[in-house]
Image 1 (cartoon, rainbow, N blue to C red):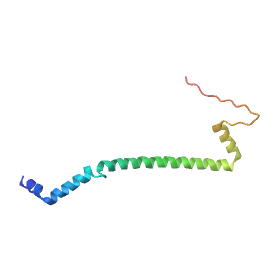
Image 2: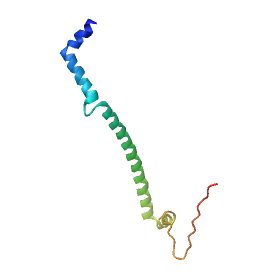
Image 3: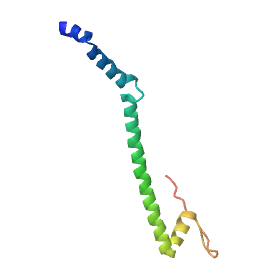
Length: 97
């Protein structure tokens, strides 16, 4: 018991304890903020990887379109429902049962 009271009377221990508590709970960069920022960083890195994959797919598709006119026609017909002047376009949608 005597060592605890002498420890609490030690000004260096008290100042270190107060400094530690201040840094952990009350500072602008406390532990809770660090955890939130770390979580946000992970989410941003995941979304960055997703968008980089999307960019790669789009650039590959663009290269394929630029190299081949048939690929351009296929994408125009499938994605944008384009047709030639002498053609009829029928869109068939599946029904749910």
